[in-house]
Every structure is written in structure tokens, then in C-alpha cells.
Image (cartoon, rainbow, N blue to C red; front, top):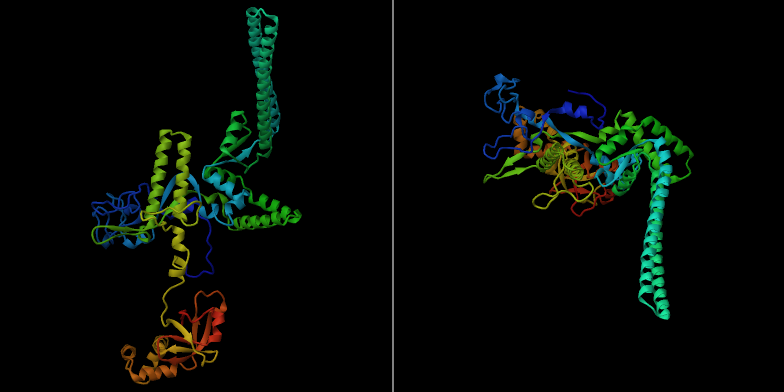
Length: 550
């Protein structure tokens, strides 16, 4: 147990760290059995992973009582120990396909987009399997790709020209035959001339149509190859391609680059990242560039990469293969009157992740088509996003059966009702009080009107000491009884001990040092704290129902 420390640092956890926290893998989405109401084996409430539901009793009941403490049951595999370990022990889910951490892949500024130097919107399309990203490029083969494109363009242009010439030759033969038929059937020279002219005119029109269609095809071909040439020039590590663009290049036989989509592609890019080289490159950009926008982005990126280097954080850890599972008593299932159950939203979110993970595993084993696997991987990414941060992720939040957003892990931490502000920073304190504030214009700046009932709680230790010192109580226990009775002597002692002893007044939110100020108390009747109106500015307070703590 660490007893003395100066600071806490929150960093990315490595896969090995997550495995070391875990007491077992959760492979089933079930929580409790609907008939026995006992946790399901390998499920989200499994006693083998998270510990026993009853103090010093294994799942099968073979070992009971404290004398078997520490023994692992050879029948059910549950350790005989305190049930409170179910608040501490974590499990894990091994993901079939990696996913990116939504805190880094979404939001402003987008950390992952900054690390990889890829625009945010394009990166999101890669993560959700809508676009490809280039993960590696063979420079030598790329140099020959432009020449290959020109050769292909010449070949296809020649093929088009041959096709046009063949059609024109066929057309000429067809109309020559028509002219021959006209000559044989028509004996009148003047009529024959008119008929031949009509046939020749029709032939010219069809020739013009064929040439026009060829011209359009040639124009389209040139435009296509111009776009492909531009595309090939742009291809480098981190460049994103649409499915159509990647398909066109693949159809032409270009293999000088590798492209992938989703979290596996992001991992490949992060694996190829050299932090030292990137920081050095950014230093040069900051020193030499004249564009303020480029300089600002380079400074942001350098700060992030330097922070990762100093904290020994591998950027690859942003992509998750292992998903920690919270202890079950922190996401409880409670039985309600009438046989119904109330469950934490986290159980539903974990269930979605496990179901999609198991379905993807089964489809891979069956050899399903890539388009189906891609869709399943995207759905797994979305399920993990909803679990980690349902309210701040791409797209609309995942809703429960009542049409309300699920409360995710991040929602449990953030905000006024979150774990930090509500539970860790907002503990209840002895010898304190809270009341509505009202104006007290007759007070001095350094005084506050303090209700007697609140003052009685604030100065309780001093009152108890004086009761014993003055012989009004024989011992501290008797002094507490006298204090509870609130005899006239207690109020007299309160008047004395409150003089010259300042109290601290605080108004939330405490955003600067003027949020907590000391005042000398003036005891008053009533239940509201009186404050001089000119002291409101520092507290950002007014008298429309604001409350202050003392």
C-alpha cells in the first residue's frame, strides 16, 4: 500500500498491464441465471473470475466458513475469500479484431489525427471501415508506376482506335452492300442518283456518330488516366483512398503500396512511427515555416509526441486488443419487488461488445465474405465506443429500451455527478454546514451572519471541551448528552467560543482563490447565512437562492 506520494499520473495502459489487472477472461454475455439467480460461468458476474458472492463460500458450496480462507475450490474454481473482492477484481475481454480508443480517435483536438498527421474526418472514415489508408509504399516500384500508366493508356487508346476503325469498316461494307442493291433494283438514273445520295448521307451521319462516341470514350479514358496519375503521385504512408480508387489501382495490377482500413490500419501506422525522428522533423518545420497555421499545428503535434516519449507511452496502445471489465459490484444487478431486476447500463454495454465479438469470431471461422466481416468489425468498434464514451462519439449515442442514452464509463467519471466531483472531491465533512445566503448590509466586510444551529455544529469540539472544563459535564460522553439537550449553558458557551474564531465560507464552483474567504461569525436567529452585498462579486453570488458552505 502506497502511503506517501506527491502526485498521480494518468497514462495509457499497455495490453500487458490490462492482463495483469485481470483475474480471467469473460467470454459469455450472460450475467445471472434466470432460475437460480446465481452468476453464470464465464459470464459478466462469474465468481471464478471476480470472487465469491457470499463471504468465505465457494460457488458449489463445498467450502464454507473462514477456516478455508485462501483455498481455491477444486470443483468450481472459486477462491474462498471476502465477497468485497468483487469490488476490486477485474476481468478482460480478448477482442477478435482490434479497435481504437474513442478518447483519442474522436473529439477536439483529435489526438490520433494529430499523432498520425491525418485530417480528422478522413481518419474517422478509415476507423469505421469506409476508406482505405496507405500503410506502406515501395518507392522503387512507385517510380515505375507512372511509366506503366502511360503504357496502359497508350495500349487502351490503340484498342479504342482499332475498335473505331473496325466499326467504320463494318459500316462502309454495310452501306456498300446497300448501294449495290439500289443499283440493281433501280433502272432510272435520276432516281438512282437520289437514292445513292440518301444512302451516302445516312452513312456519313453514322460515321460521325461513331467518331463522336469514340471521341467521348477517348476523353473519358484520358481523364481517368490523368486522375490515376495524380493519385499515384499522391500515394504515400497515411494517404487515404476510397474503395473505388483502391479497386481501380488493384485492377490495373499496382502492388507498390499496402492499404488497409479500420483499427488494424491505424495500428500499422502507429507501429511505423519513430517519435525521435518525428520530433526532430517538427522542430525544423517550427523553425523554418512562415505559415502560422502550419507552425501552430506542428507545435501541437510536437507537444503531444514529446509527452508520449517522456511518459514512455507507446502510441500503439491507443489501439485496443484487450478490453478491461469493471468489477461486478461497481455495475450491480439489483432484484426489485415483484421479481424484476434493475441493472447498471454498463452490463448492457459489455453484453453488446461480447455478443458482437463472439459473432465476429464465428464468422471468421466460417470464412464469411470480406464485406460481411468489415461490417461486423465496424459494429464491434461502435460497441466499444459506446462502452467507453457513449455521449461523445461519432454518430448518435446508443439508446436503451426506453429511448434514453446508456450511461458509459466516461459518463460515470465526468461532470458534477461523476466519480471525481461527487465522490472523491465531494465528501461530507464534519463540523460544516450549508445554507441559503441572504443580504446583511449592516455587517462589516469581514463578518458574516451565522445561524446558531450551524454555529453549534461548527464549534462542537470547543463546546464539549468547555462543558468538561467548567464542570457542567463529568466526562466527554456526558458532555455530548448535555450538548444534545441544548441547555442555556450550551448557548452561552457558543457565544464565547465563536468570538475571534473565523469561519470559511465557500461557494461552488470554486474557480479562483476568492471562492473561499474567511469571516468572523455574528450569531443570528433563523436558518440563512447573511453576507455583505459587496462581498458577492468574488463569489459570483447573488441572493436569488444561492447556497454557500461554511
